[in-house]
Length: 447
Image 1 (cartoon, rainbow, N blue to C red):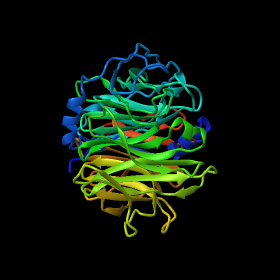
Image 2 (cartoon, helix red, strand yellow):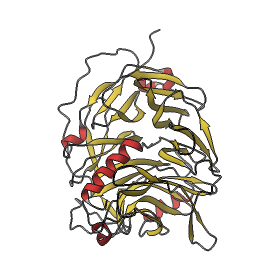
Image 3 (cartoon, one colour):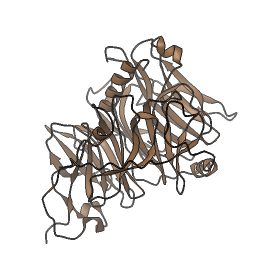
Image 4 (cartoon, rainbow, N blue to C red):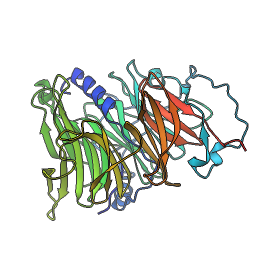
């Protein structure tokens, strides 16, 4: 089986649902050319089928695959702090490995970036590096669509617009080989939250045709199809307070999607599938049901398989599965044969734990020396992995080359929680819950 890593009922329900999701569910955009296998053929087939739609508005028909273009808006972040420290050593971007460098404490680099483009309450949900650019998934509790943005110059704390979206929140970034996927939520379009894709030598594409979608949280290619996890409901269902955790599948390269799994929210609160992991035994789907008071009321962890006749089976994990009773909070598919999830075993240890899943989906507990793992990022060229987490009363970034031995390379305190970590052009970047980006400057150690 070939696999790839990607990573409401009313406006008020969507608002607090997304807040809960972003607070509890980290993600990782990992810099890892996972074996896409059949994905390459799928992506090649769909290229060129869309039309340029320019700015997506309420009246724009984006119900099928459509190319999306970048506008001219490249507003600079004039309020970005300035780090007066001057490093005169060799360029850290010339390091062969991250482990060759030492890092200064995190410093404000970009001010509240989303605040320039959307209303208050903005947050950065994810960071990743793709095509030598630092991409940002961000958004806020508003009804104004955000744009796909990226930093292109490490010396300029300023984003450039890569493409339009129809969503007020970009929830997650996923890399599948050389293809970047972005999940959208809290849509401003009648067609619902979307999935955006940038394939090699192709324009940005919005995958439409997802029926009754409200929010998308994860996507990947496996079992010869594109799979999307999120939340969905018809207009009448939303008006009744009903919405559903859903999984959709496209077997025609993203032109149209069919619903293959649905879970009701019991008329209140939130139900969603928010993490997908591809294994040789099927697709692992992790989710949650939360009532109107914010309390967890169910964890619909499931195994999704495609039968020999092409039909889809979605079954709860068996009672003896180690993750059957685990409320999965974050997931990182670091390669086609290695994924990590954090969560709380509701029948066991009450604190967060970290599990490694092999290509068969078999989980084993892991230790990183941190209280909580917030985010992971892997540098595929060197095999080094960065883990962002909490320790004692502060935050740490630890690094490992084998996922067994870990070394602390950053340790600091902050009143604002970091949400994402990655390494780009010699420095470590930290997305934060207030919408800003901090940077830990990399240096070669003094002789």
